[in-house]
Image 1 (cartoon, each protein chain N blue to C red):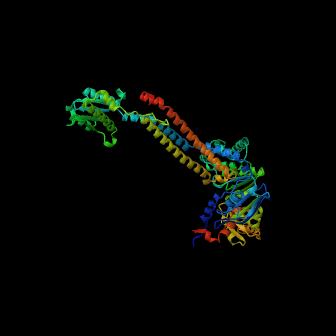
Image 2 (image 1 turned 135 degrees about the vertical axis):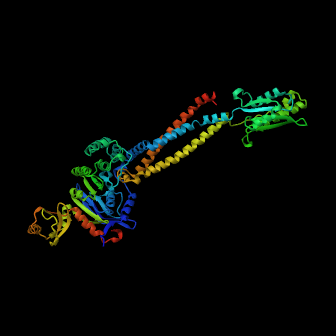
Image 3 (image 1 turned 120 degrees about the horizontal axis):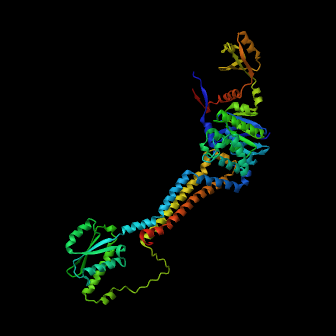
Length: 312
Length: 321
């Protein structure tokens, strides 16, 4: 394991932000750091970056305490914009890259390449404040990677991006992955985490709830999800009466249901045919990360009423 | 019962926001690139500051102000010249011959005493004499501000001279009374000497100043005109105030600049690349250099403005004052 977070705790006054959190990352992987707002994701990321220090526990990269790891090895994209708004894009990125020890020529070369890739060459000489939010986020991403770091830590990199820009950024992620970079990122867009990550951790209120490889996490749920569409009976009300089946969503195009682990999915098909249904879709799949997230985070949120606000 | 929805309390978010102030370190290579990083930060801060619109506008305003302030000596001298425009004195002699001088001679004597070698427009006083019959008219003219000074000479029963000094100026704003009073004193002396039958040489020896030699070990006599001294005094004070304002202003700009990154996530990016020491020194030097550039421009413009004064004064006043 390359990055090891072992039993870290962090207090802010009387408030414990992180409680005995441990996780492991392999070098070169994309790691999803998931959790609701206020779960402690940013705090953990800052501790990994040595911007904050844990009150107890340790964080190491390749066996070395993160305090001793050269700063140039880290690339960080904060959740909120961390750029000089009145500075030009190229000047800002060159400044940050050179501050990380990159020569001016190398920084310029990398900048040209990435601006071209992100299709923002035309914005090269514009001030940050003049750019759209999506383009600002691209520049923020470039600020994190231009010095070619080993580890990329990205806090909500897809926040506020339209699908086109999100795809561009996703491609950049994959490019960095191909170059062997280790990427840790937090997101609320779980479809993206599902698409990109090999390993994930879900934390809530500073505790780790679920962690491991994405496949393993899904398998651990012990359930399947089935999708069914009947052309002549879109409601399929009889589904509610079948044991071991819980209808999760009724959509225009299909009905999604969760199946108990020991339920034979053939039962659904047989019952549908017995009821004279014309099956146009039947799909058996694993639960989505969104389902797991809602189930796990919801389960840990509910008992602690004191820190929540009830609203109708 | 309506469905209840769990919503995250803002407490946790708020606490997470607060923690951003605890940036602790930036190690490794950053610390080894002290000079390089400081240089980069200085360059960025300097360039950023001098290209800011607010900085440019402030500089332009300051330069205009200083350029105009450099004209203070000339303006003061011009005002002084206008203020010290010729004072008109009308002498009405009801005392007959004074110190052996008839009316025209008396007028000429007073003019010589008050104006010295200055003649024409350069003379501070214009002296004329008028008959006693015009006295009430002249008094009205003084009252209406048409005449500056009316000096009436009478003789008392004991034959001593009596002077009546009539002016439209208030007592606190009268710069001429002491001069006229000195003149009156000397005329009285001459008249008394004349009445006592002293010869001219006797009177001269009575009036001769004492043989007095003053030796100053420090030769620092300022021979400049009072208006020029006053102008320089104002200029020195204006410069001192300007420097005081600039020092306060620049200290504020540096303080705001140092706090700039703290107000955004920029600090989190920067502490990964540079040490707090490098950031602080770079900020102070960069912003300080920008402020000194502004100050340098102010000094240059001030000097140019002052150098322009000599030809300007020559054009305005004829000679260098």
